[in-house]
Length: 80
Image 1: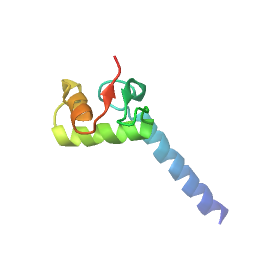
Image 2 (image 1 turned 135 degrees about the horizontal axis):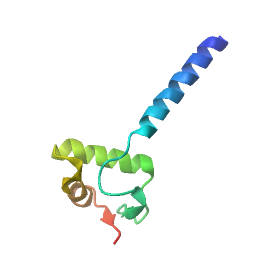
Image 3 (image 1 turned 180 degrees about the vertical axis):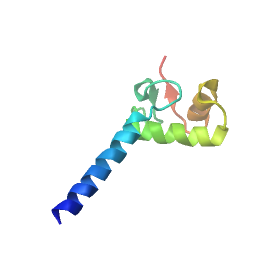
């Protein structure tokens, strides 16, 4: 039983480490953006929104299309 728990925990840690190693491509960090409510998005929320925009625009992430998608489709505001 302990081996199974250990294997599961190590697997979860490896998956979390792999996800953390991936950088969120797009404009900048989440603290430069505000949700329509005025609050900054969490890193998970920001990553999900950027991924949705990347799937939608099918362009290189540095093209500015992701920023346009975040602003237009999701109502986020970029801080200047």
